[in-house]
Image 1 (cartoon, rainbow, N blue to C red):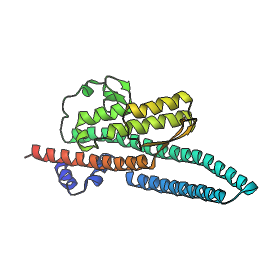
Image 2: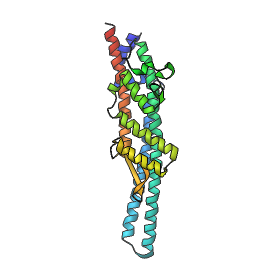
Image 3: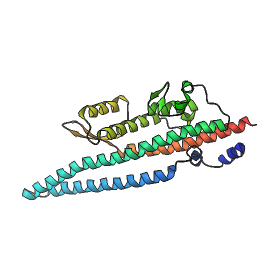
Image 4: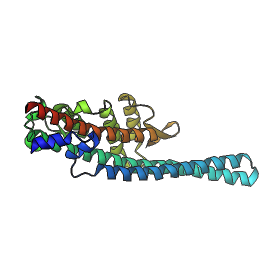
Amino acid sequence: MEQERDELALQFDDRDLASQLLDSLDYDAQLRAIHALLGRHRRAAEELSESINELDDFARRTSGLVNQRAVDDWVDHLHDSVFQDAAHSMAAVGMLAPFVEALFKQAFPGIKLLLDQRCLTPSPHSRWSMKTDVRWDCRFTSPRRRDLVLGIVELADATGLSAELPARLPATLSALFGYRNKMFHFGFEWPESERQSFARRILDEGWPADWFGRATTGGEPWVFYLSPAFVDHCLETINAVIVGLGAFVRRTSRARALNNK
């Protein structure tokens, strides 16, 4: 039965094979919904930007009270754009971060089941000395410390999954979940100390300069945003992870076939 399943699996592409590890997650439907909402938000941002540019152009062509009113409207629109961008970032990270977490939280127990079914043993790793209740839980890293990002990276290394994942995954996860934590604890306008610490973290961790946008006040950080470039990068990373999970299934199926020869 398992041999027939392995042979059948090799007929599918890697993206479809990922469903063997994510059997209760309709990842394609979820991604379509995420893309749709992100698209609506981008169009709204473009419309507000056009309104700001039109007000700026109108203000430059007027004088007196009309000009003063146009400038006031322009300033109001600029101020509103700060919070619209923050709201869109909150929505984006609120969809992307839980999706990524769910992806890995389901994938690793799926990998355990896959290896057990194929009588395959992962390479020695400190991870396997952890207690059984957390050994396959990516929210923990060895010996037993809560850290989702390090837990994902450690389990990927321990199982050999990391060979199928994007090289920049650790940095991407750190940036995504780091921003998620700030937004969901502090809202749009973080305490000044939190703004400063996040600005330092961007530099210290070497995250690309185009991953986060910011509004400033008095030359200091005020509101941070997920940039369109980083949102696109996260979506590309998610797709690469799904394909990588399928590639892992394919590799283990081939290993099983070789062992049976």
